Image (cartoon, rainbow, N blue to C red; front, top):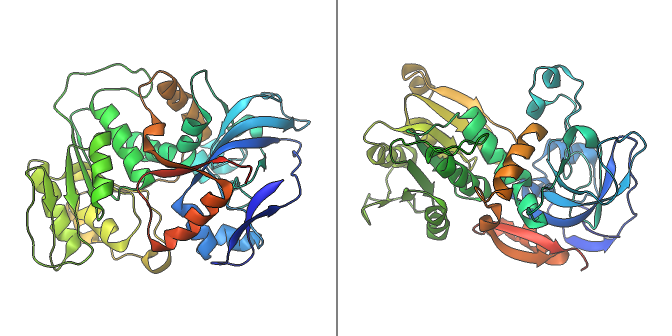
Length: 387
């Protein structure tokens, strides 16, 4: 079969023929129909991820996938050959202390395609622990939509709905409008409009306030189209502060974290955001998300700080003095998938709105390496695994 393989960190990712995987006793082999190109895969390719380092090279990236089961292990009960499935990138064990506490996202023995094992930039991929983790696709949910959900959308759902507990009448600030950030805006817009992730019931509450913050005008335009009520543009080169349009603020200054946070407070009635989320994982976005939260608000760290940003300087005086809740968020557990898939099937959420490019396997490998020059707006999805 074909797979995109790298044999050294930051080396060429080349499409080549590799052995066909086999199903483990508790697992399945999935014929990949769609898989996303995610910045987390880029971090793995750069050598930033400890799991990829521990696995060793050569390696196949990819962790956002959907497809059709073509082989089933001897111990699998819930799935059969021919089932169309979505695959969460955290494959929990169901046996450890954290799984027993209902915290599968921090499973002590979790597997992750594209990190702890070869991933989905391949025609076929072996997925263990199938009964615990896979979800069948409902009628009307495409492979593209399911793959777009696989990491970024479900990660954003946990960050906004489960960890942030965003409710109608509250406000949301999202720092970084990549895949996770844009997904958070979509989910936040649904929740703030009164859409319950469990029931779909509507609620008459205050008009939602969702502030999107990014350095890219294109990313902010996409955020606006997906539900952001206000955008804040932060130019890469900081200078004097200036304003643009009424709802779209441009901030520059000696301390970008506090300058941006000041704009967020202005746009939230002078108080700050109820839920302030760093979806980028940079030092400045981490600090700004703390400064942008209201007194007693929640600060959600979902962007993964790596490399030089691994240990950001956090204004803990603000966390203590304003009694902020500083909450980490990592992926989503398999039990989040059925409810989200139902929302997609009913049309209440549409992950395909995030897809900007549909590419071949070789083009996807090139897109991953091109992230050295920055991330494109929206999701790049590999849908042709034949070349």
